[in-house]
Amino acid sequence: MKTPVLLAAILLLPASVASVGTGVPLAPITTGATAQAAGPGQAGMPTTTARPGARASWQWPLAPRPEVLRGFDPPPKPWLSGHRGVDLGTAGAGTDVHAPAAGTVSFAGVVVDRPVITIDHGGGLRSSFEPVESTLPQGAAVAAGQVIGTVLPGHCPPAQCLHWGVRDGGDYVNPLQFVLDLRPSILLPLAGGP
Image 1 (cartoon, rainbow, N blue to C red):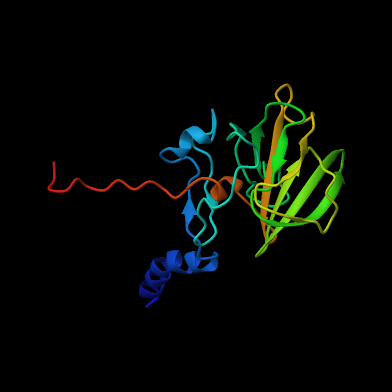
Image 2: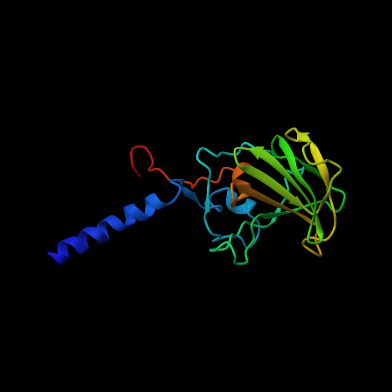
């Protein structure tokens, strides 16, 4: 009697674990054409949860499209160290930073020793950029593509870079999912066979 119950529990375990999550598919951030976009040394990066229906609908915060110097590498537990955003290469200090999507400035100030600007895009999504000097006050409305500040030196020495983080509610998510299609590549068989 105990063996069938144990077998049933083992068979149902994957289904019950899957239903505990958000029901959102996991998508690796380095598949197909996006492997080069992740930057050198980023192959084999951890997967990230994508928002349902999230597709590349935002603009890059830097123009032209920047190199990703360091990818999204969230810690397994919120209190552990990790990289909760991406570092984007810039042309140097003074480079304009653009709002990736419309929103409202929810914070503009210094965190620890770096100036940060955060934009609330609605629906629980917030983008933060550092180190960025901005004259925009809290509560200012911004349009997609609008200049929100300029990059300051101090991040990614000796190169200059912009740190871009995105939170969905209380969770950090991969910002690249909003500017690149990070869905996994699927190889389909050739029509008619080999």
